[in-house]
Length: 143
Image (cartoon, rainbow, N blue to C red; front, side, top):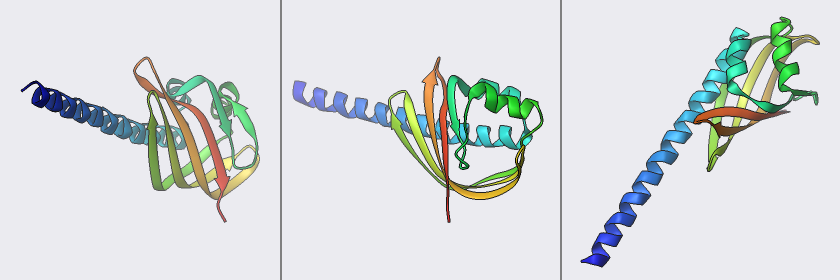
């Protein structure tokens, strides 16, 4: 009887863990959509809430920015994203961190001129105070 109870408890704990993982994956997918919507809207207040204080943002051009510079470009009205269209996203969870790897079409204008790129995008999300925050962004241009 004790062995059966242990097996049932183990199965229950596995189910709970799987449920948390599924909820976190969905939360990351939602956070990705929130980030894209904020970028397209130029909503630097939403970005301010979504980014960690030490966020690193590496563009496909090779330019690397910290959080303040990145948000500052939106505040100065220098970034105008017309679209951030995802074609695929894979999410991998690692406790209170997650990696989202996506293929994305981004287009609009920046302080250096118009852009229309297809990229692989890697986002590192970390859970802080119960909320998922973007800690790092890296894009690589696709041919």
